[in-house]
Length: 210
Length: 398
Image (cartoon, rainbow over all chains, first blue to last red; front, side, top):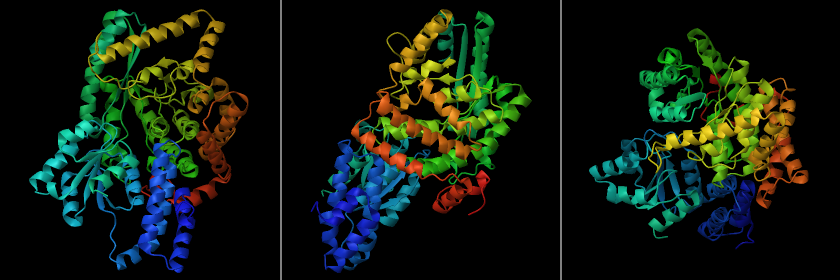
């Protein structure tokens, strides 16, 4: 696996190489699902591990995620034809009143790299916008971010609105951001918490028992 | 909080006190709220001044709220107009100085920083930010002149301190954060070119460059700001400071006193030490400066680029360039070279991963074109779908 050109291209963040490797493998009759699950997702797992071990920085995560995306563009139509679905669907957004998006964007990129379909609602997202998106996209997970102690309560407000609207049990909720703690996640009734982008992918997979 | 820190300053016999009030977004979006709080703070400060003779000043730093809309209109609209209202009311409310942490170019910079994309960083800091700051500071200086208060300075906080914070979390390389710090110098100089006179903002760790180039007094923070953010810059910022500052001390009760009072206590003792060294003459001052410098400089590239000799060397190269873009390009090239030389000859310690990144960034910096028009055209194509409005920076419509 680790010597396959597709694995190496994703690991090295080589978008052109990843695309070329996918094309070559498909021309040789490879199964699209096998390319995804045997090479691309393991490569992204390795990228996440290297980040956790301090061998990679975020820019390396992002270029690897872009290489993954580049290869996926070729695979997606074929996967759809075979009925294959993404690992899961995640709605992400920074809560109301908070304009910070560096961490949120990073989590979105890493989730995409991990094989999730990501719907990014952006920053300053009101609870009503989260609920509307849940009704429209039926995600597996809602991931909320906040950087400020003053905006963090927006996570609880959103969860409360989901409860009022009868949507709480339809979706798993994951939260993160500089001031957010596991204890806070428990207090407000979130299902998961992560303090890093790569950890968010692990938590998301764990929530979906993958 | 204000009463407590003023009382401590008086109790310890501090001769001078500069208090800064940085507004939270709602206090700028609703300028009357910012004015009311400024007035409360100024009333307390000026009463202490009148009663105890301490020389006191209040610096008001409205937050730059223009990015509340995305993409941000930088030169018109609701948020800009309310910022202007707060600037205009600052003097009458009791502020003595006006400052800002301007954010022009941050729409591009945030993403470029996360991708360690130097050309994007240079576009933000060398093209967009200076154009925005020229516009913004012309207004601030005019208002300050009209209302009789001091236009003090700006900071690359939203850029270089973001990089510093991300580097401390091991998200981006420290060498990148060091290069971004130096790349923030030309944008900061724009404020002084437009009429700001200092002291520069305390969170502008690039301040020593302002002092070297523009000759303005600078505020600095370092170990005194650990309550707000950890950094590898503990002592070295003190080596060239004119005002020594803390940062965002939360008003929590400690065993001795509330945290802001404790922090004031520590600042005053730091200042006593610096003033004592100064009283003992040039040699004593330089000895203290050397200790402050050498305790940090070789342990982190972000500290290394604040070494006075490095500051002088790079500043000399920056001032030879005629435009902010070329100054920023030079700042980046010179910072990369200084770090390389620091590792090779001067004992700067970098990990193998950081060295790998220094090589990558050296390659990127060498590709920055000398032709500014060519660079702008290239970047306008690269960022044609990005969340910023070129015309808000005086650039042509894409």
